[in-house]
Image (cartoon, rainbow, N blue to C red; front, top):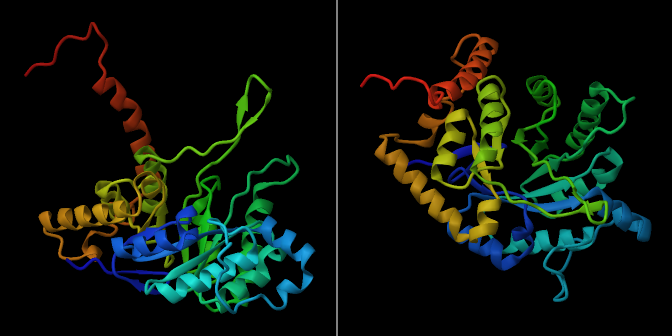
Length: 338
């Protein structure tokens, strides 16, 4: 079975990628992920706040990032400074043979421009820009929110030569338009989507309660919908992130048009070996269905060949609502004839 795929211009042995998570901060876990068959690994994110804090403490770091040597024995399990992140990236690149994608999480060009270059020098095979912004200002319109993303991407794209992926939230009013504008800037791929992490309310203290709830397969539907709309209508590589927990989740994602799927919650719950289990089940399903290669499966459920996409979307919406009545008839509804 030929599972090879192209993502961000890179040829990968299969579509299973470890998404940005604490796992990548541990070298042993990285090696276990490679052994399990991960085609690539996205590093945990380096946050703009970490970069700016480090720059204020050590202004020289932008001009001459420490790229030599190995990480010290005292390096924590989750790299907390830009310098540690760079050293850990170097160490990972020295030990694995699969592509490593660095991840930056910020909102302004100034927050990460120089570190994008430093990550490239440290050996990152590609760069993922992780955007997480929730609009709170009533005077800021949607165009301004989108322009912030475009400005960052334009500056970073001009500054590095490695492939660039953009990870977005699902809250854009017209995702196809944003994708088209990112495409024109030279972006290589989209990662869909950032999960919506927000503080809960603690009624006892009237304060916030912070915790992370891992995803499950129900989170996949939003991603399938977005990828199915974009597949065949953009040259961008498409990655599904969120909701892939078993082989059938991966099958659905590829059928929608995904080039790769990023696994995080499934690996945090079950460990790196889970990736290998999903990959083997995925390959067995393709074989049982007589698919000779991954490329024959990709996009078979996208909207590209369904004519009027807007009409199709409206039809599925109405059909979904009507399905409740069909599947849950009233108690006094006469039994259906056999």
